[in-house]
Image 1 (cartoon, rainbow, N blue to C red):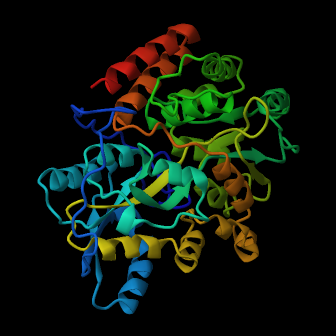
Image 2: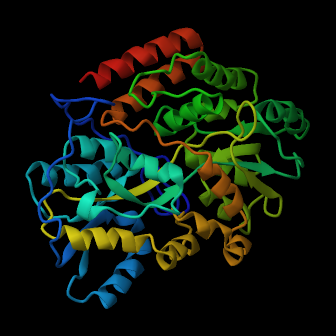
Image 3: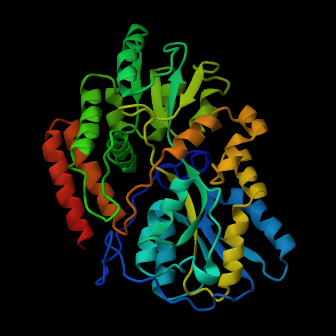
Length: 428
């Protein structure tokens, strides 16, 4: 993945395309957001020795130098990399099969952020407490939230990602302060005979991500901290209504209904849209030789009702297998991954780090001018609903948002149906 690795959830080499993952079975002792009860007992918390680290192959090139540095410093506790498939569902299937069998094939697993609660609820992850406690000071807050389930940290963030609002300054010179200002500026796009804003409204995870962004950007949320479904609140409805209205009045390009990240990338870099919502990887493409907008690209965080909007998070969290015999080594390794040297190497490889201070490095900002905007986006970001039933939640959001965008139902009906589907899924 690149600066978008795990964009919407998983990764491809330069861009990441999320593949929906299978829904895990409901737990009979579920509580909170629908997951398991107490954290599992931990054995071998002081175990040391060689470990295996499992990660999707699309992004292992970013971790190979980190593993090499670790192995050089820790020859008696070497880390072996096990590459999983490139596709998200195949990665998850391999991990789940091993964990369900009670195996210790993989000591540390790079988990898509949306899997963390699922794996924790199934008691496949060692909670990072007591002997396994790790330091999270200095990490972007939203990334830590994405690794926390039932008030317990179950994984350590490795890398992250947030959406940005891209703008062709040749068409729209001034940065919009909020959604209303963006809508008003679309007259300049109309005068230039291009679309105003292109984003991902095709019926896949990208639609869920963008719908959640509108919900959160207007002060709503899909679920509250207690796991109650609140997608039908006035604030959530207002956000979805803004998205629907924007699509109907032409603020959001009609082509968005069939767009993934790559169609969005092409529309912006070919000069066919004044604005685009996408992940940071697009900046390099937009400024590359041959891009129609090179030299005229600015980025900022998403805009919401009153100012800075809310991006959802991409990225990986590193979890320790509950069956690992060398958990102390595993704990030290996942903490090693987030030290300053390694997080700096992530940034240099366009792999968004979770260590906040990296975004302020002047030499990096000169190389990657979008970093300050990305940091602001991440500081205002929110994890997708932390639930073991996230795949079903995502489907409920996609199905009903798509129906509202197509005019099949109004927003009141869409949110009522969305709530019923999410509650049904969370009930198991």
